[in-house]
Length: 306
Ligand code: CO8
Image 1: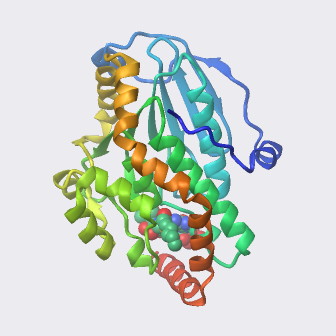
Image 2: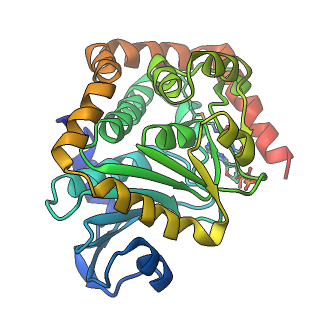
């Protein structure tokens, strides 16, 4: 089911990124987490690049993908390219059946799309960037693996999209961490496939209101509207994510995968059919003077609030 997609910037990325080769490491997850999830002590394969660290527990088939791009894990072109390559590696690895996305940056899951990639650049750059954003979503939303978002910090806009595209979302119960599709607050519009993904999680009415207002929900509110499936204390997040993963992996893969495909196919097909048009729409929209002005003001506001 996983979309057979090509990362357009692969050559450029390999030249720049210096992916570390696969290496054996001692298991990095806590003993308590392993005990409660029923996962045994096992060798852990790890690979890392500049912005993402992946640890694969070979006996459980579960990978932990950790975002490590401070200060805010923004989804830059480089981040997205590394993300897609890492995910493809796991997708093609027969030892891997599930992946947990989480952050290595304190208090931030991901701040969403890197705004600097959408401001003051050429239309060619906007097109390349947007194709990478599409690619990330297509890969996560269509993944054959069980995908769980372990949300340990703020998760606006594109960060929320990553979480929404997973099969299950667990968030730290801290009300200071918020999540949502806040594009309208930046004066921009979430594209149809962000909206479709959101609707499929929270339903039409909540999605419509939230998108119009660009609402960011503190974790307890996000749980109330079904944007996240459960809340846990920060110290229990990893343990709980592994336990939920073990439940999902107890089922035969093929039945779960076919069901997932059936549920998600229409939304995926829609973007695949309109991909070039969507890139064209994005570049035209984001190049507008009024939109550039909104983004500039938003970035200034971010700097001023410090
Ligand atoms: N992109 C680029 N830089 C960012 C981003 C971002 N998304 N978010 C924060 N930064 C920068 C800040 O400007 C700041 O830079 P500097 O150090 O140079 O001043 C630095 O990161 C640290 O930021 P903060 O001081 O704000 O860090 P905090 O820990 O106080 O707060 C937050 C972290 C909560 C993540 C906060 O930074 C924030 O709210 N950021 C904005 C998040 C946001 O609104 N993202 C939306 C991006 S748009 C998107 O994802 C979808 C677009 C869909 C396309 C629409 C089609 C047209």
